[in-house]
Length: 108
Image (cartoon, rainbow, N blue to C red; front, side, top):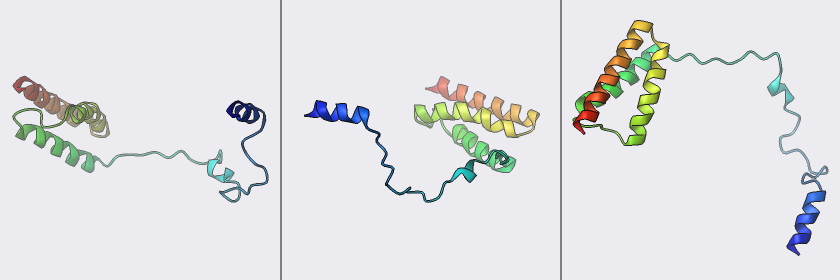
């Protein structure tokens, strides 16, 4: 019996043409070709606040204060976050973060 159902499913379309569209009218206007691309520019002040919080947490700890997954996340996103800052400032944040991570890993 199951084999018959699978065979039937292979030959008949899944969609029913007599069923109304759940989304109403076509939404093709959502994908208009002339729509301007959306760009996100992080607020440098928010980035600095988050970097300060992460670095303060690291400086206050004797060993790595985060689970390995969180530490790995910070190793990835801290350099990415600094991309929205001026070059010299970004380099200093990255240097400070890496120095703290090295100190914490040595202590472990």
